[in-house]
Length: 77
Image (cartoon, rainbow, N blue to C red; front, side, top):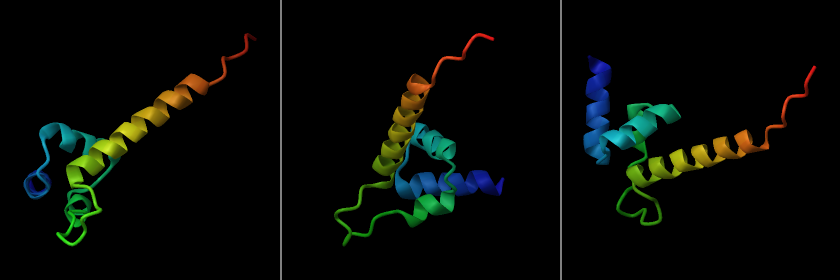
């Protein structure tokens, strides 16, 4: 399948593990967007794609936990 080949190419170019690929898919990224975000050597400030994906995934989990915690209890009818 072409899609699997694209994900394999993105994993190799971005140096992503299987866990990081899973995270990227859950976040809704496409292989092309991961490849486009590979930092250039002149972009020393930019995190690697693996660090970027991990950071976004952790942020998503924190946000989900916070909204779950803040949900008001349902009133009994």
